[in-house]
Image (cartoon, rainbow, N blue to C red; front, top):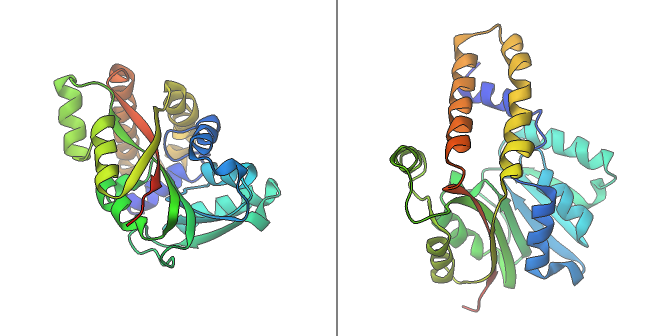
Length: 251
């Protein structure tokens, strides 16, 4: 199996493929002002197995288009939607987030929890803006510095892995320059990382190794995941995911 195959296998059984929480998605919905609107069309980009998709479909009068480039994740989402009785509100598209096919001005909202880093925050918010209707909503969670100063170990790691990591104020400024009016921001609490993402993933480690015969490739995947977990546990005061909610402004 390739490295990507192994990563998919580790994560496809998870409810989440990154930090987040149902209550936090609902808070973003509240900040967006969408809860009192009807007949919405929403794209959930980089949806994974659909944790946020299911909340959006349950909480809003909306058709939710769930987009991910991994069909394995979308299959799990389809199963979850059927189990929740939400299949009539959710459709899936297996496509890369940098090759979206939505018509210009066709979406009331774009959601992307913990996924926009795949193409970069600034590139993503600029490219996706055209898909939004006037006053359409953008809601994304993104790796964010929580303080102005950080330990050297932490800064070196994340500036190497994701050079666009920045403070919340810097991300807000990017949104404003890209044609959005920020409506709200909050950092994800620690339970979104530990209880909702890291601990469930760690619980899957033994079966993952067993499935792959304790191979060195599988062990390397887990070492990398554990390194990230250890980094978060040591330095959670300094970084996390910021959740940004903004409205498309007039051209």
